[in-house]
Image 1 (cartoon, rainbow, N blue to C red):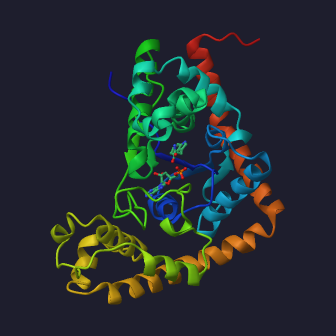
Image 2: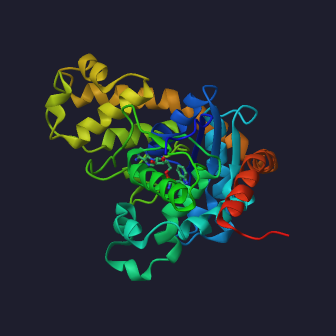
Length: 338
Ligand code: AMP
Ligand code: TRP
């Protein structure tokens, strides 16, 4: 069956499971802001996803506000885009259940993020962590989203979303859910840990020196880049020369993404430079770009009631799109409503 043309719409989300990192900013938030105005955008703080691993209830609401503050401080305009937190729109959990009944156990068993997170302890993980990708599919398809900007680590989950949409459409003989396109492009698809260039920079690494937080001040940013692991070689003149130098490649990618440039142009600009020249330039650039955002986040966090108001208003707008799609889904599946 050929697909209906769905109206272009963007959906993406970030978990409030710890402080936002430079990986979240460059791989997600900065790109979300860039898509604003090009299509209708729906951006979510996915608190239901966060509790797939333990979250302290006293912290969770505040982390939810902090992620919202990160979106807003980076330039997301809540009058242009929809910004809300997932648990305020109950349709996410409802469609998530239906998709649990569409997705196959064999599909879930192939999800590499679950394997990485669960490690040898799979039996002790929550059932939610295992089912997580089908809730993510619900987040996306509840808005009939056609485009999902994410970092490289989420590619497999967006592909699973397409599989779920295709199976639902096929099983019920409808053309109801779009086959969503992951939008994964630019130099920042996978920002790596500053102490080990083979690991992703994440919210929950062991040492704070591994990552730049969006709330770090200028001194911290400079110190972390100064201490970032590198190698003794100067920078080569093409990207080929960085093939087996993951830490060096990562710093070039970070510089390029912060500077709205390509990695190719960045390496050409710094060809032959040593770390004594490149690292301070990177730290200055990062401070210039991130410090104003950190200041704005602190200003927003001083007024939590205003953040809550924005998320509440966004949830209302989100429900206007989501509720009719959920109702139609129930009709297709044959749920009786009186
Ligand atoms: P999470 O923090 O896991 O909720 O991720 C939210 C978004 O940020 C997703 O689109 C991720 O792909 C993206 N992201 C997280 N860490 C990184 C990273 N180190 N590099 C690039 N993108 C990232
Ligand atoms: N799973 C994503 C992550 O860990 C977060 C997420 C949840 C998401 N729902 C989504 C991303 C829908 C994009 C679209 O990073």
